[in-house]
Image (cartoon, rainbow, N blue to C red; front, side):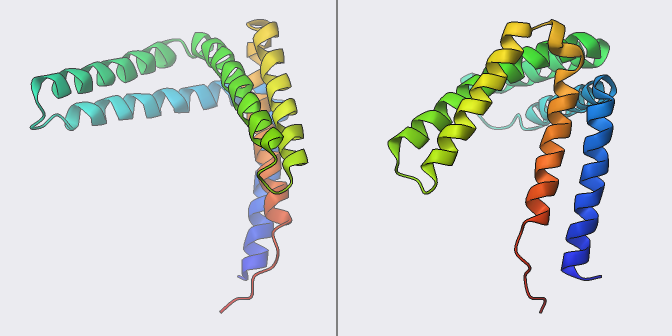
Length: 167
């Protein structure tokens, strides 16, 4: 199978996933939330497994970190709907901060295509602001729809990559 064919097949699968996530945002959002809960639990257990020869303060911070990860994971895994609502607010705040940082980067003009960076920053900050303003009512659809949009953009980027000669 050629690299181009693999890339196109991957893009098609991403588009199918994106369509499913956008058409069924509640299911997609809940699944994403559960995966995040599982990852957080794994990280917390990993932190506990890393307890070693640190001084008492280092061990205390590692245990505290592990407990925060595991506690957050239990919160999400026991009630994924509440976890999804919290995750939506968190995503909105992160998007606002990311958008403002993109605006600052683009405004500095030190980067190629700084106009596009400014537009990206404005759109990201606006979407984040909309999530925060409409929270918690947007929690039912937001995470799944954002996940679908991200999959769509990944597929488009993949399809627009220049062909690379195979060796």
